[in-house]
Length: 532
Image (cartoon, rainbow, N blue to C red):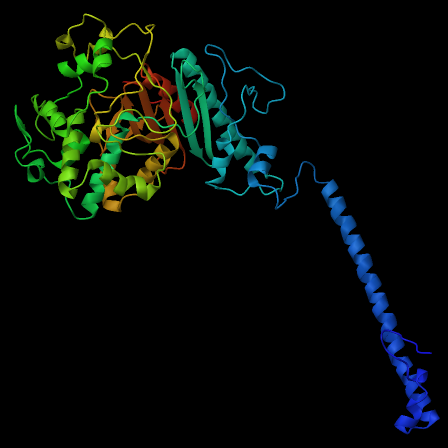
């Protein structure tokens, strides 16, 4: 019989081994006894050790289970679960809600924010928060008191913005309005009203729109990039680049610098009240007839030079679109390419603005998903355009109760003064890059935000190079990129460090400033400083 213990074969089980080794029976017995004395204790010790390990593992499991059962509200981290699903489960973000015009959001006892969701929550409200993680608090661990306090404060801010959006639609008779906020928690989006008066579809994230004179900031950034590349200087005169172009009616390009053009201190006259422009675009009949007219750069320059200057270059501030048209012509002269291509090269592609483009003057409408835009900025029938001034213009507008006009499909002749299409998300990224200096070198960044006081424009504002600064009632200053186009208004504002920002767009143009100011107060805790 052969005995096997721990894979060892006892020698006593093999009698023939005595003769093979040539050992006596007594010597063989001593060897056998010694083998047993050594191997048996080893086997016993190994068994005891294995038993101890099993018992230790069991005790550890019990402690872990007990610890989980005593952690109130904590959710274990699961690698298979997405960050978004944990975020929505533990701390859902405020979403864009819609209530019928003229009503307030209803209170719902099961809602974390006291607002009833009438439609499915917007997916972008959480997914965009993951794109800019500033604090890793959604790790499945309990939040600290400080983190909970900060989170509650941010959520309260988003609630205030959403409430303000609803109030502006009801109080200012807006068709629709959206706001995208970027702060410590990431990015939040809210909306109120509709994108289309016929279909009544809601405003959504990612919609494209015309941000009006916000396009001036794109032109300024392109020009400053050319300066950084050594191809021109802001102190070059217009005459150096466009010889003989800016002349006549008292205009003199040899005395106007590129810097003057961008800061609205060129002294050039204001074309907004040009009689021909008013007849074509500020009356219902005229707009219907001319909405698809195609302008050329030469026509835009002639429009500006047909009127005399208001004052000497550098003497004062006067908001002038024509100055930016001249700047666009200089960009094309320096580069030998189109204005649109240069904006794409210097701004859109470096910043990855996938929803932004600069259309040619021949293109009508807006590419991709977009809201319809509606205007009430038409003068009354029978008003003589020659009688209009900056002071009396508003008094000659149609009654606010008049039906709005759908002005979505048309050509845009703003060109380098208002020549881009964008989204709230892209406007946030663009404006933050301008504020923080990540797009331009330090010298050009300083030049962009070196400002002059404005006059006959928005109250308590300062204008830089395509950008502006607006004073809040509590003394703080916001950095701003803003503009208005027929049927559309866009305002993107941020703190000087770019850490707290908001981009607002309304597809209406009546009472846009009052509406945006209400949202600014909700987002920053103070409204814009009123006229003194």
